[in-house]
Length: 273
DNA sequence: ACGGATGTTCGCGC
DNA sequence: CGCGCGAACATCCG
Image (spheres, rainbow, N blue to C red):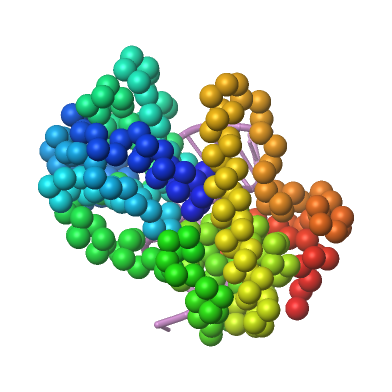
């Protein structure tokens, strides 16, 4: 499920589970997620290291261990970090494992192998293309309406596509972009540089609101998940609500295709320019 | 069975 | 250089 909110939840989980803990054993499956290191170097670099910091930028996670060892991680479309206690079985599609010094085990599971796992000196990981080319992170960096205006400036492309361009603004994906645009009452195909000041301000608020609300929502889920899981209802405002009534105006939510992705919007609340 | 899925990267045509 | 598009990746779910 990973866009910025889920990656942030993952970061908090890892921090809570493992900050200050030592990795007593590490393994990784040889697959295309593993970048620039073999299963042997993965193990050698991480074994014996204590986790000192876990940070997020956009949809990337960077864990720092003592001895200047880093683990850079992208969850792709399906990736997750899960915790298991001693004796519990590994999750499906576990691709990497960190055994901690308190008998907990952390699993990186990823069914589709979309994503990335890289180890190495922290500075080298920070300089790698994925991390170093990220745009402004709305929850981490200084993110004001004027910063957003400069992100959108000079872009004729549809505003939704620009919002999903990780090199410009990092962390929004197909869901969060749709949600932010609905909150801001802006049609997704509007050329980015056609937004006026008021619209940019609404979009700025919409981005922060959907990210914060989704994070809060996911935290609530975690608690409920411990018990039993029925199917949670769609927590989003327009995403995947095609054919249903817009919760704001009652008109029918539409779906169009943009750059190969389903794009949901309300034709009344988000009129085409 | 078929189509679509929360991501990124690459090649192609313009 | 930049943009839109489609494909590719491998699996799951409805």
